[in-house]
Length: 84
Image (spheres, rainbow, N blue to C red):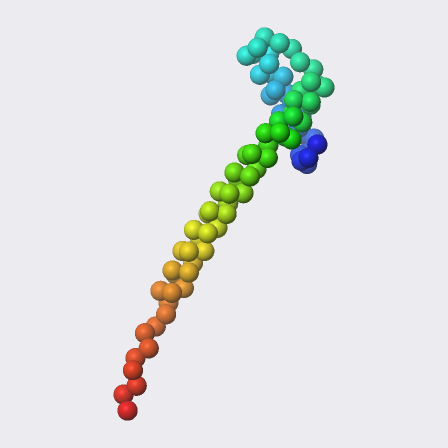
């Protein structure tokens, strides 16, 4: 598996997948099938969500940096010409 989740999180996700199959497809899947499906989702679909999260984080950081730059520039004091 390409990601590291705590066992409790993996178990919760597997339970959710098994419940989905039971409620939506009227199929019962076991732990192994749920684990295989979780691995498929993590390896094939997960990177799309991960990359979007990275992109969103990058945009947020860029916005914060622009805001910080504006804040810093607002602290500048005017330099008056010398009067002598």
